[in-house]
Image (cartoon, rainbow, N blue to C red):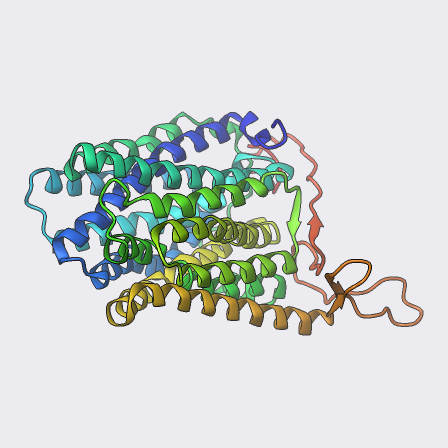
Length: 465
């Protein structure tokens, strides 16, 4: 257990985790109540759910790359305080409208858009801020615990919202969730800036978005997970639209069981997140591709679930491989990038992972409206499987590896590297501009950087400020 939670020994990271946990419980409560409210106001329309989800993520498409530039240029902690304060203000206004009983469907659309603006600024900054909270050798564990925190909230938030929707009312759930969403503002204020591990900030005009895109374009090991998650994130990760409609329309679930499908998905996701907490190295390409293949298979099966219980059971492994995939891609990107580009590269990752949601959510809502909600789920699973298969072919062609199926002494699938040229001592990889070397194995070791106390206000990468 000490190994699993070792990042929590860092005071700043403890504050970060506590604030995120409280806020995310409130956010998931809000989203669950919001989905229920939209279905009530729209007459059970999956299309309306798709519009709300799309509006939440349109700002991600428009603002995320700019936010990544801010993360590399300015103080991430101060940016996070401002973004979380803005989110809390928008949430309070929306909760007041709901509590006053005057809310209409267009109010929900506008609130989703403004909350999305705050999240579009906050998410890339928060993703890259984790590397300032802990030393490099703790980064895999810190990222995994952040994913676990997210999924603990995703389990407890919808379940708590379902209970409160049945016992109290929709306005009460919005008021409670809004109060919880303010927590990160106070935890960021309590952090000690002197204990952050900061890199030297680029001079004005140096942290350009185009430079970050060119950097990624030269790195196959970054391009593959980013491109794979662009397809899977857009099509396969539309559970806020599909599960809410599946529960209420196809399975006739009431408010007390409304959040159970999301909770089952989150239980599996928590398992996937915890499976990565002991990781001490950069995950290999085949590990994340394998998780993507299995995710596609289980999501495909959910689309053919004959009843509520079967769907709930299948969502557990679906959730496991969804977060194991997302976390593995996140680790592979974040642990392979140079510190001065981290904000912009993580902004690109967030853009393809979340910024494509407006397209996918609208498509999922339209498909569910015309062809049925279950078909929108199995079709998403099929697309995710094919995207992972394409990534596997890409990786094999670039690396020169091949797949070998062995039946003895026991059935297994192996990745075989090409033979070494005569007279060479080791296999050589194409040179990369910067960052850790590419590997086609299961993991890449990360050496902790030397820690030297410096007097300068902003020290080199790996030094404490």
